[in-house]
Length: 420
Image (cartoon, rainbow, N blue to C red; front, side):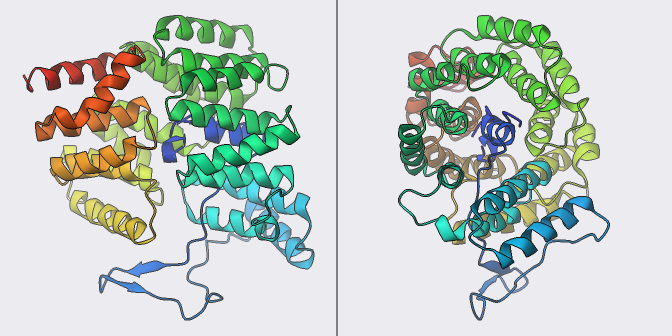
């Protein structure tokens, strides 16, 4: 999904990973985090058979601990304090949010299980504390349970109409699912809860997907210039939104400028690295992708971009990267995790050269997530499979919402003209 994501890092696309930027931004801006499930099953790929833990208490793997790392020390201290007082909801929320920040920074999904575990005493309550309920909604959207997330967020807003975290997260879910009118309404309702720049960015996200991309881009560009005092997280999020709009408008020079501005802020952000890598791949600059991502392989999303770049370069490690991704996607399917379908579709199309499997994955992904990047892989797969009929839902979405995206419109023309 796309990110609104970081109002102190919340208004994107995760998702999914790609939700996933308003979400990551939203979650950070408000210090709120989308959470994932506890990972209780890992595969022994040497034998290609699942490894079953002996008990729920068995430790499968420990995340690296660096004694001199202040973040590691801080987390260790909070965990120790929470074990002593497991009903301390404020501490539990603080710890869960910090784990989410690490997911955004490092792209390692294992932190998500720790985040949910910290909130376990309140997780099954029908009406948990507000902060826990918003976090629970974040987890639901991470699993693509958008209806569950909307239910939790609506309940929060009934209890606390001025809850900016819930409002922003609901806005992004609406936008990710192509309910632009509802998303824009929630964006406008953020006035007075969030800063002027963030509200403008949220509204611009919806406008840019409903036939007003050029004016939305101008408005947000002007608003960013109007607020030089904005924090780095806000500037990161706004520049990411501007890259998306400029890409859809075919303004490559502006796209690169906004990416450079975002990277220059010095914030480690997996979503930023993934999107910039996609831009470099489109520009036929795979060497730069390899240099950018060669040490970022714990993230499935970044490993995919690295594999795509190495395939373009015919690198000797390309097959090894592809095998690692294949194993990760297989493990996700065994867990019932469908959050990577769009990226797996891209893997199937470009690396496996399996257009039919890519189309099947893209079709399933489109049922729950409808952002331009989801449309792109759907149309590319349909074009490769020579199956215009399969992509009718995306073609209708383009028409109904007056989507201004030069690349998507080009794919649609090729598809309707029989691949010419």
